[in-house]
Image 1 (spheres, rainbow, N blue to C red):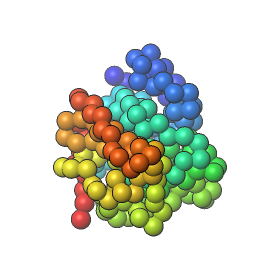
Image 2: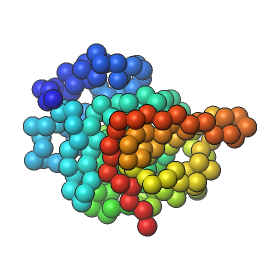
Image 3: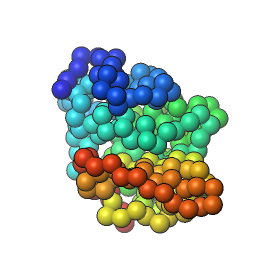
Image 4: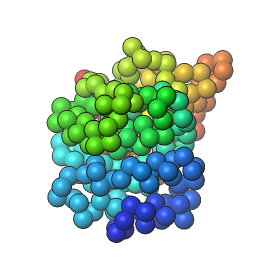
Length: 210
């Protein structure tokens, strides 16, 4: 399904009950998907399906991104780790949500995709403002230097849930990470215990690690 405008796409996601939280809706309205795709896919900017970025990677379907952010529940002032930031769309959405006092740390392992995503994020001046920090590397190992994180988002499917990410998750933090068939939502309670929920019916490219 292809829409003519960003607003039409977002209204579709709201009508279908995928987008619910006003802060997340506002971010989708501000951070336009067309700024994160390849030029040859411009006519598909508001399509509700994944788009290729090259190197076996895709920019995720809007429905999926909306769903993942809703179960991640990012808040203003949060410190968030975005693993496999790809096109930079999720990183920019999160940066918009966390606001001036929050911070998003993005990791991408593929050099060409890293540069593509960085250029896209710079369209919103998030790097210049210091709201986003990026590095190229293996996201499955997290970014220990800046941990713990209030939220961790992984946008590619891993064979298992990396222990490093669980350890770098803050108390009362949420980790959202897919596998081949669905999405894990992992919550760390006040005692450090882990609770999991699983949502079936999603498909992702594999998480690339070293």
